[in-house]
Image 1 (tube, rainbow, N blue to C red):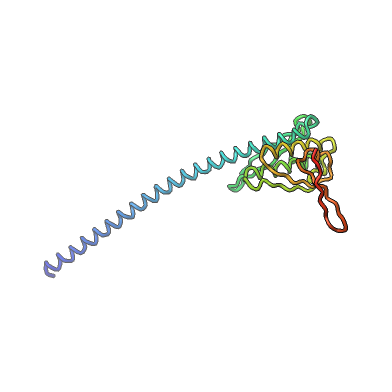
Image 2 (cartoon, helix red, strand yellow; image 1 turned 135 degrees about the vertical axis):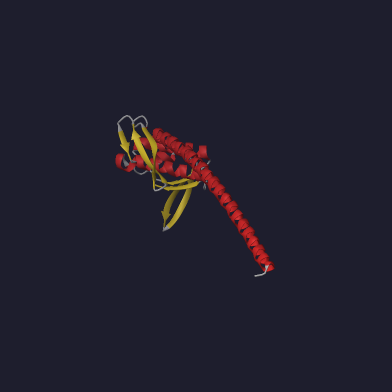
Length: 207
């Protein structure tokens, strides 16, 4: 083989070696970029997790505070009620379990199992209020005989609580009820009557 041919082949090999070196260098650069992206994404994920936990913790405390306030407004001093949301993690998801307590009578547990229907209804109402407040959804809330299990002695306090929450959160609650004690705290009252199969609404003067 002539020297010119060898030189040509050698030049081709050198050129291919340079191309391979350049490709290897580019792959290393990409690997480094990917490695940095992984580090950045991991750190961003950690920051986001802490942020979510912070927001969750803040909202949890807010819900606990308002529901406890509402329960005490209605049932105190007969019952010293409070709410705690216990956080548990399962399969990467955070679960919240409402635990209601009567500190004076040493009763604690899920409200449906540990307390009467009146406490259940008031607490459910307070959760609805917080749901709308936290999600900033429509300020209009419709309730239909939602306090039928609340004992008569507590019903006026339910009306007072509803009125106070409407003012505090700028909400409108439309309540269908036969309970006059609650209606005493309404801003507007409509009396509904069935006349020959037709529903007639008559506006009454609020107290």
